Amino acid sequence: MSKPTVRVFTPEFKQAAVKRIGAGERLRAVAEDLGIRRKLLYDWRAVWRAQGIAGFKKKRGRRPKAKPQDSAGGPAAELAAARRRIAELERKIGQQAVELDFFRQALQVGSVRKDGSSARTSTASLKR
Image: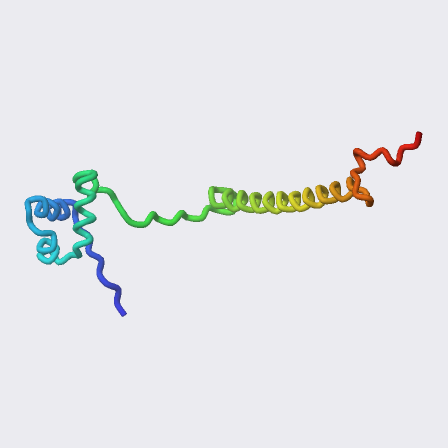
């Protein structure tokens, strides 16, 4: 199965198509005449209105993939190390949150006496 061919249009071609629409030709007729989709013409017209011909000259498409650096350093190694450190710190924060909840509950349970009175305000254990 072969891949469909990708047509690349020059900025001048795009500009000419948009000018035809601006001159009053129907968008559908221009699209059929040029053998392109109408959506493409709508997109080109929007770019033309926003940026003029400069919008057509911008390079579009995928950015090239970053080449992995050697293991001695570089951005890829630093990024991996930073991600490992973040994961480690997130685990530590989670463990601390669990411990704080445990100690809060222990303090609440320890501060209430069996008879329902609070240990802080009760003077029942003091003898005169």
